[in-house]
Length: 79
Image 1 (tube, rainbow, N blue to C red):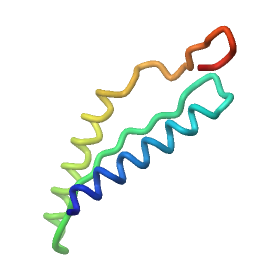
Image 2 (image 1 turned 45 degrees about the horizontal axis):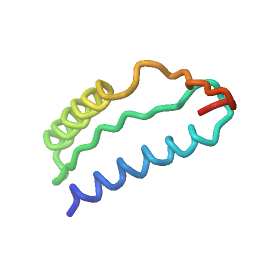
Image 3 (image 1 turned 90 degrees about the vertical axis):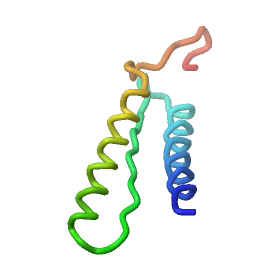
């Protein structure tokens, strides 16, 4: 279904960021918040409502992200 595909795409995007952060030598992490909505039909009302739904999901996702972007250090270097 389309909803499964949207969830799969969100998970893929987040996994790519996680992989980058695990292999990066930077002192910070890069994060992403993703909001998605499925829009059908071609009229502007549907598009506008889809935009509002995606924006709401984006802010819900932002609430779940870590507040700090600084990587934690271990004795051997970056985590």
